[in-house]
Image (cartoon, rainbow, N blue to C red):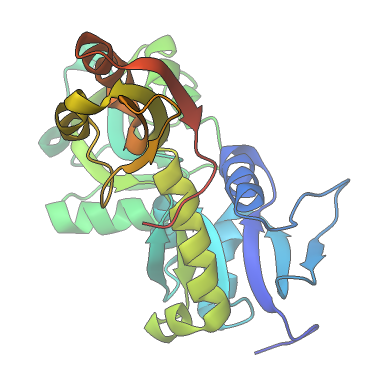
Length: 288
């Protein structure tokens, strides 16, 4: 593998939502990867990682060829590249679906696409799907703005990555059939051995800690000692809640992690049984 520093090389998308999500997550995990301008490489000497900023579509190719150790990209882009890579860790952002879409008035279904022109920015992914379905269609490769291709007369339907579907609706299109692929941002490597590199193990552990922390908050509260058992059933924590004595011997202080989505209901229940001074605090990172 080409080596220009001896550090682990991690590719990040150089623009777009995937880039923003990756940089934000890596920064929270304690890595120095923020560009001040248009730098192609940011060296994090402390963590022995070089962050290389590449076109999102090229990342899987560089990783698959062994030039880059690991990369962050979308499943859809990795599959479409045809590169021989493996998913090391899903990152939980950048969720999307690869779908067929066509004008509403045509009332098409996937099995009626045979012989039609389909525009896409993911030709390899589409061709694989057409083969699997036994459809003979003309694939029109475009670099972007696929949804306008039908109005311009170059395609009869499209196959594109869809997030909310708002852009399709604005173009008078609707999704037809079930998604061909569900995508999200992932950490990829050349093979399973890459996942066992010490720097990659540490990277995944940190990223997992940030992602798990986003699911939880810390609740602290005071509770009468005689109601502690009931309170601990409401906030059992990961292993067990932390309980500390207060100056008033009849009361104790409790600290516990709870699911973020449940925190308001937990506060209601704690207050109902006598909990007071209930505080919810953010957790920036954790290891569970």
